[in-house]
Image (cartoon, rainbow, N blue to C red; front, side):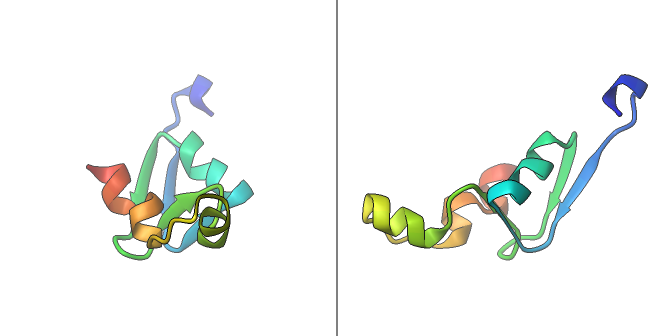
Length: 68
């Protein structure tokens, strides 16, 4: 679609985890709902198991991170 100059827009209204996380990252523009929309490949339980860190989904990859 980019070869035809058609802008791709993704709207993230909940968690996009694993394979679903690739779609918004390939879009030209993203609309991410604050405190609800998140994009990450590894979920919070995996982060805790692998790194021992406890964090919120918003801190991991929320709208504030992508839109600031």
